[in-house]
Image (cartoon, rainbow, N blue to C red; front, side, top):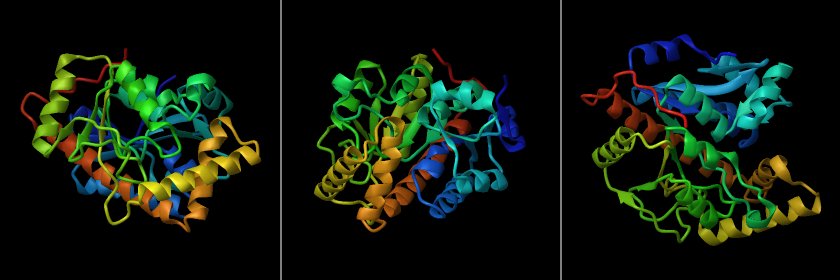
Length: 312
């Protein structure tokens, strides 16, 4: 079983040029239609404008692909039945010949297999509230611990237990670094109350990532930045939206993998689209930062030598 890379992704890999992996669950399960396709195209455009090659990952009729063309993006964005694919789901969805949208975990896996060092997304999965007893913890965290890929995001999704997620990442040996922020962003909000190490400029960030990769540590790194201030919501408002969405999920007996997309849809409706707007804005900002970092790494002397990231 091979992973198919587009011609543009193959060229960038062969020439050791800047690449940014992008997930597709954000498109299929994180944003309403038709905003989802607009975001997918905007993300790719932002990466290209910064000088890198986008590699959006998805499953098309049982084929794992990195570097979807506009028609493939449109098909995923419009389809009603798209499997949400974490790493455990890939064999089933591939064997069944289905459409699949890759989560952070599955996108990390594919990026690492291909040799893509940088990935951008909106927010990480993590420990669900009550996860200390239910064991409801996203595979994103374990995959980060074994895939030597840098993930640029705006923290942990607002519906999760952000404190326990940060603690779990620490125990897995995954650094979480703030870019121009000393507090873990709360995804829709800049605030979480959780302190993290900070770097102030692109040069410091590049050197930090280079050091992480040069040490040969088995896992990746999470680089976070807050959502753009003009779109960010107040922490108290986000807490209210999350609690209302959680109660709605409980009343309709929604749990497991279906809970996150249900709650995101509920929050979008309750906030009259405010969460959708901030999600779009932060995802774009993260794609730009990831592309800037990928370009800096590719152009740095001693880098861009085709060395693939490692997977433990």
